Image (cartoon, rainbow, N blue to C red; front, top):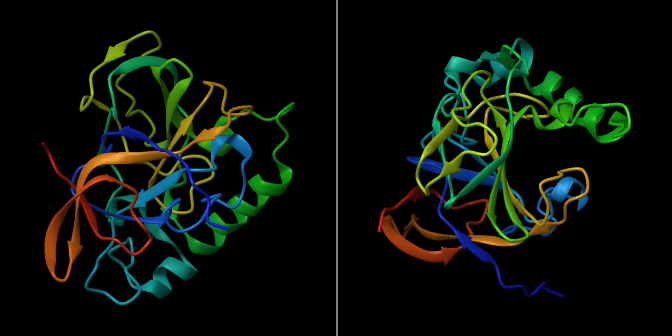
Length: 231
């Protein structure tokens, strides 16, 4: 039975063209679990739409498989991340080292290890989230922006931000399968205990029949080529 819910509307937190391989527009829970507030979470990365398989890196796939790809050869690494709404920063954790390369087998190992070995009583949440920001959007609504680039976070706890402010950059820290932005809404600022909240984006464009068309209050699928669209 298809889940019916009313999403919270926020602004798309990126600019340029993006793909969401993990999205509630594909399945719920979008990441296969309700833990860590991820039930309705999105992953966004940039790809080469003209190459077979839509790779997220400039190198040949064998290089990605065997030795990995330097982060600066991944399309979205270092792209600006924007505040999805007006709000207040309640958590801003930086300084977590990124892996120097995106490497399929090693990143899969990290993902499996995180899924089965993470112990909230012993391990820091940064081992999963890497560098991250949590914003309070309104009462009982918090936005999490995760896996950010080391040293890129521009905000601090208690700072008020406006929708569209640059707050960090896309990175490859923590349990990241490739440089990308993990984005979610939650009912708490504590990722360990938070419940995920459904969210949609107030306005973006998606290619339909070869043309860019505006989408309002939309939830992109894992096949959509999307881009930010200002009002």
